[in-house]
Image 1 (cartoon, rainbow, N blue to C red):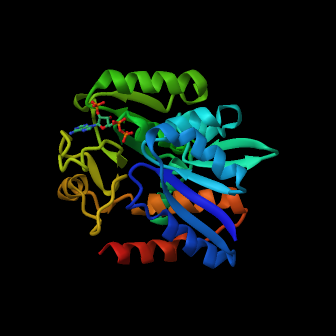
Image 2: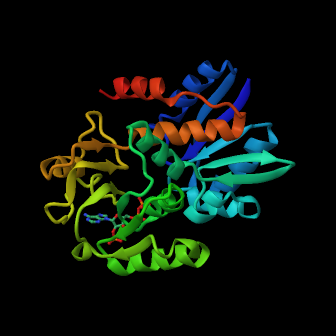
Image 3: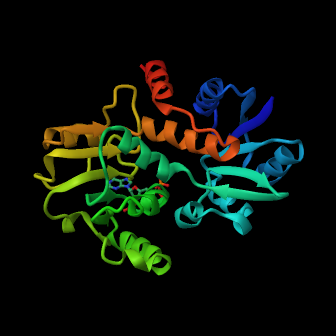
Length: 277
Ligand code: ATR
């Protein structure tokens, strides 16, 4: 079989082995995908050993995505460069390569729900690693506006300035502010803060959503029901989606990088949702 693994700390609850075994079954590939709990001091040597022993691909999760970026610094995809972090590693021509599939995973999960992003007004809440990871894939959809909003507004401003330094062609679309700067109605509102993990709601103005708006939380729960999604439904968002699909679609994108096979994430997402409930 081909060897894959996900490295993180903690790692016990990772669904990546399940996802990739389901993708492999679809693709007719014989794979072995392990969870590896890596002690903080051992990350770099664990990656090196994995590939020396013939491993084909690695997923990297918390807290190692920045260190994976550093390790693959000589051969990063544009998505990884723009995200500033790496969740997918592989060897090519004897060199370590890195990509970040989280952002394209989220965009593809939004498209799965029948929503085109072209010409849309998108509000992105949060300015940490999760938000940064989705900015380039969102801009590439041809959206009309992408505003990054953060509790600490200066962090959003700095993030947007940093993005525009390397992507000046998006100066008309990309902007930043604090929650007090939110104005008008938005087609897509994405929660990339960790508010739902702490069971908090966000200081969002009422009237943010139209009856066609999508509220998207990067966090997931068994019942597709985070505090942010509850808040959005109350305020009139017709479509409210947690981030379970993002998890499945980022996996499908990593699977494609490693195996050059496109799988159908939809039945895999259904299986995963059933496992959670
Ligand atoms: P991640 O890598 O998951 O993005 P992070 O870099 O720690 O994690 O960023 C967490 C994000 O959630 C930040 O944007 C943070 O806002 P601040 O920069 O102002 O701290 C945001 N966040 C966390 N808890 C929040 C809350 N209760 N309300 C609003 N924003 C919150």
